[in-house]
Length: 193
Length: 176
Image (cartoon, each protein chain N blue to C red):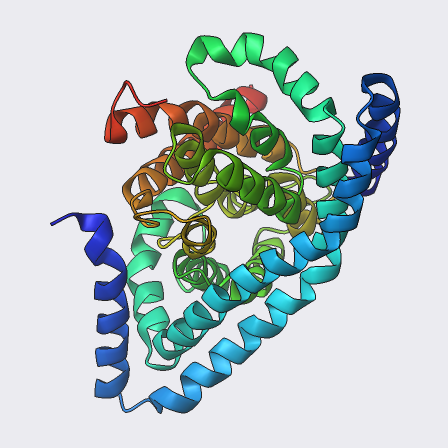
């Protein structure tokens, strides 16, 4: 999909520049795009390295474990009908704590494990179960506590307070997650009838 | 004192203190985690080079301005800054593409402008929806993801509508 999008963007730019007479600008953009990509990665790499280090300490010292235990009863309210000693619920909790702590690399494999555990426990035929849908939806909404990447880019662009957006980000994240999960519940009720 | 100013140093101090208390080897563990993420960052480069090329050409040609000009007729009504429209369009489809656009918006408008803040909030509070749903269901045997995508997109639309509203609420209604 992203391949088609890029194809459209590049050909569209060429066609539009011929019409609008902006070929010189487009040509300059092509030359500088590689260097722009490198400078973007440099900005990201520093902040990602620092957070990776800090979060590794959190993981090793058992903070992620503790978070996982605290979250399980709460998650039962969202993921209903699972067994008492559900392996899936544990995986879901681990996936969510990794997401909260911004451990994107760790969160995806944990989420996929949780998805497969749900599949084993709920045994759907060919259509996803409500719990599987909610897990995927939860991961498609951001649940990161510290928007480190965004803050790094803001700092690089000369922001006075790169983290001042934190309360806004948290509120919007939470509201969109709640809306998405509510939508999942509503679609479920509606489709059952 | 502002919460957002204390949050990061506080969290870092707590994590280090807890790590020391639990006798984690702080130095080696930090270096291990930092190294892993550094590799991830570098592995993003080829994708970002391609996306920067596409986004850069599209912007330089003037096509992006034309597209946002067209769409802004609708979004101006809800007070969404038109500079952030490309980000809102690309965010659910491509994470790297959204990063490339965010960098552009921050450099052009300034990170502490209205548009810069809305873009930052939108980026920080959403995910690559299409990609995530595809990866999660790709890992299972089920063929129908049913209402997963519409539900997830409901979340994206909520974030889109709330981002400009909350930035106004936090940083002033006259900000532009």
